[in-house]
Length: 384
Image 1 (spheres, rainbow, N blue to C red):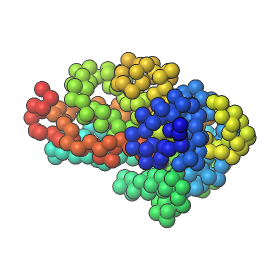
Image 2 (image 1 turned 90 degrees about the horizontal axis):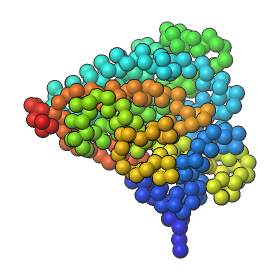
Image 3 (image 1 turned 60 degrees about the horizontal axis):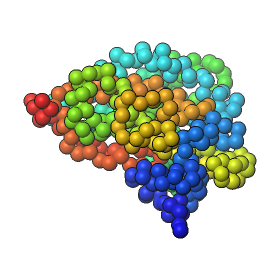
Image 4 (image 1 turned 90 degrees about the vertical axis):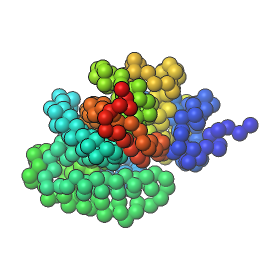
């Protein structure tokens, strides 16, 4: 009898992967997926094991997709080199510093949602989640004289390039051009930006390395926050009772956001490369093999989460791996939460929003709905 691992395709994993991931986990928590040319880890415990062991399972490999687009950075290095690249940027992303952005994020999200409500309709991903993520990240990185529209364009071109490489293609010219434009902006504003000036004064990173890491932070910060907010919007608009519940009790917004993070991580998987022959989950993995950890699967492991496909705001979210674990845990975890909560708070604060068009959540590695279009009928009667 053929195992599901022998038949699963990239299209299967890009559309609605959750039934397939459940079946893969039940057959074996580590499976060779020919379509991915990779081992896929679907068990929660093994996923954490791989992410914590940066010696056996490394990101430092020339095949790493993001490295091909923007060069070596904190995302594609391990050990002392990883810390050299990451540590100078850590300050603004600490929880205590992120909390200082609360009012700014709330005001920005409220303005963006209000503009859509006044117009009567709009795409919450393109017109709220994306601009919110860019405006906040531009402020965090203290980039000067950089247009939000330009940053969004560079970001989308870099994301598209990473998608192409992840699926086995070559870096498109648009990806190289977007990174070159970003590098020019970073070089031009580094002397004015307090953060980039501080990073430069450490003397540990060259301007090329600073640009690569800024690209990572923009790429990671925007894709995580934009997609996470878009996913939260989709869950919210798909169930009018949720909007009412969150409007009546704002303390539910944070657990609502955490549950959407668990059910649909915007970064659905992380890649590692085996540095030596190793046994994992009963499978013999060879040195050099690609090992893809499915955060989506780990977050729905029934051994950890009861009724894993159900929506439950009373869960222990401390066991979620949405933002990864280990040395490469997401630097922007606090920022993503801040923005998603601000975005949802702004939406529930505009009475009358109803779904007009909700695209499905899709994507192989980076997942989100393409569009989340809402209508405001004008009198809010739809939810009364």
